[in-house]
Length: 138
Image (cartoon, rainbow, N blue to C red; front, side, top):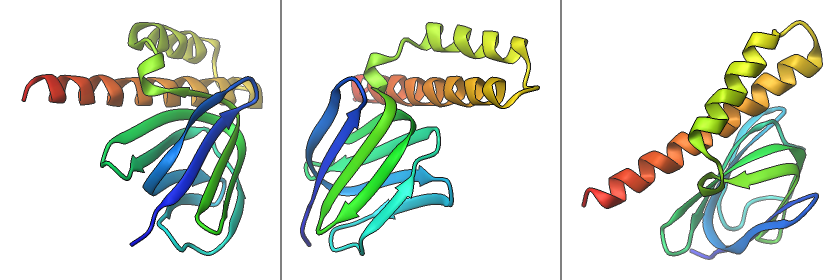
C-alpha cells in the first residue's frame, strides 16, 4: 500500500515525525482520515486529538490546538499553534485545568476556547494512560 511521511510541528518545537499508514485529525469542517495516495488537502485544525498510526502499528496521539493541516504527495504536515504528545500530559494537572476553565465559565469565545483546549488535553492524556495500562496488562 504505501506510506505517509508525517511531520507534527508546534510553534515552539518539533513534536513528532516519521512514517505512518494513517493520520486522523479534526478540521473546522469535521474529522478527516488520511491514507497513502490521498488527494491534496489544506485545512484549518480544530482543537482536538490527532492520531497517527505508524507503519509499525503504534498509535501516536497528540493534543493539537489550532493551526494548519496539509497533505500533498503522501506528505502530511500538521502545523499547530500548540501541541503535546499524550505521554507529555499529566492527567491530574489536565483535570485541574479543565475544572478551572469550567469554573470560569463559557461566556466568551476565549473562555469557550480554554475549555475546549483543556478537554482535548485531558482526553489525550487519558487515552495515553489507558494505552499504557493495556500494554502493562499483557
